[in-house]
Structure formats: structure tokens, C-alpha cells
Image (cartoon, rainbow, N blue to C red):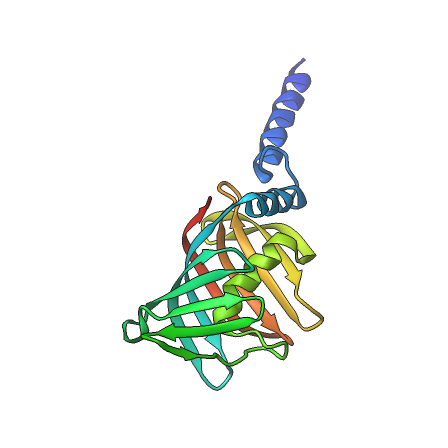
Length: 192
């Protein structure tokens, strides 16, 4: 009788542990599909992010607010203060910086022409419909996450960590030819 109680207790503990490893028993791929559905069904995304763009010989850090969708969006630079307020318009045809009537095209980070301004729309496009290369659960700091990687092409991949509780993005990395070129840390994410 004591062995049965002990086995029952161990079974309950194992079930609780396994349930805590997934959101309601969902696999990483199930959660990624839920993330994709939320983003696809949204009419608008608002994302604040700290972006680091690494050109190899120079590194730029800036804060941005993204508003829109993957095909048509507006990105406002929040920091550094010297360039705060500059707006970037991103369309399928490319990106341009606009400030006080002046328009400035940005330079590419990848062989495919990805610029720092286009990073967030590219990430969102990957979240929506990119070819999934891998999915899994990982611990990111103190947060349990579901992480997935998509391949934009043969040379560019993006990897994003989403909070398993809220399914909101925490961090993304874009790698081109094996080199980390963009890091984005997200805050104040709204999916409407």
C-alpha cells in the first residue's frame, strides 16, 4: 500500500513538472503557431525596441518605436537624442529616413540589402510567415521562453525569444553569413 502511495505521489509530481514545461501542454511549435496567428490577425503592431546594428567596423545603438504591419510601417527614432524624431518609412520597395523635409536612404547590413531601419519589418514578416528552421523552449534570464528561428534566405536567419506566458517578443537576433548584425530588445509591445 505504501509503495502505491509513493508511486502516486511521484506520478503527480512528474505530471506537474511536465505541465509546467509547456503552456497548457502545448509544444513549442504549437506556441509558435499561436504567436503567428496573433500577429496575422492583428490590425496593428506597436513595438518599442533598442536596436544594435553591427557593421563590423562600427556599431550603432538606437531606440525606436515601430507602428504598422510588415508591409507598410513607420519607425520613429527615440534615441539617441541627437537624432530623436527622425521617421523612417518602410515599404516593400525599401526604406527612407525623413526629417524636416530631408530624405536619406540607409545602407545595407546584409548581402540581401537589409538595413537597420528594415530590421523590425523583416523580423515581423519572419514571425508571420518565415520558413521555420527551429523551435524550442529556453530560459532567457528569469523568463521561460519559446524561441524560434526563421530563414530569410540561404544567408540570413533571425532568432526570436517570446515570453511563454504572454507570447510577446523579448529579443531578436539577425545573423548574416554567420555574423550577428542586428540585435533587438523589445519593450512596450502591443498587438491590436
